[in-house]
Length: 159
Image 1 (spheres, rainbow, N blue to C red):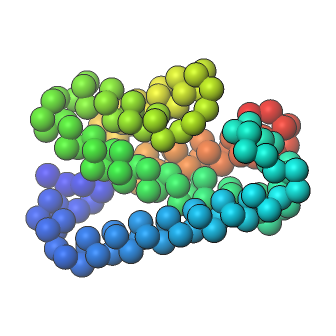
Image 2 (image 1 turned 90 degrees about the vertical axis):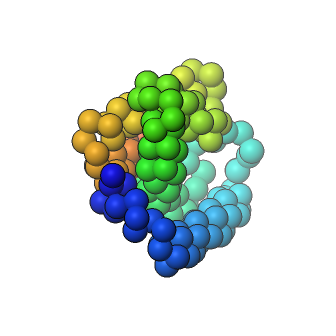
Image 3 (image 1 turned 90 degrees about the horizontal axis):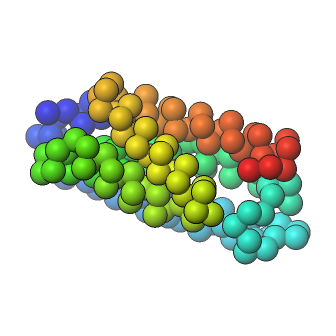
């Protein structure tokens, strides 16, 4: 069985886990630094619906890089690459799609309507992974969605 182009036997290699841990650590540190930088924006509030228009161009581009490239890569690896695959083996496809989409939703704090949309996207990303077997394709779809949403919000102020 393959996962993101790897065979399960290859996932037993220590260097892959050390590399994965290093990437996760870098992501956590980068996220913390980015969050601190965003809090320095004039007019920043802890309101989840803050417009990115309060950010400088550099801050907005850093946020866009995170939300369109790095964030989707990590989320897809965790939620589709590991969680969905593991749940599918134990519970079958449909329960695994629902549970992985639900857990994906819990990581996104929005309004109830927004969380419903996140659930539907999570379910759709899981279905795309199921149909194609390509984690890279799902990562690109997720990243493109976030990129277009970020550009739309920056141009219109509406999210």
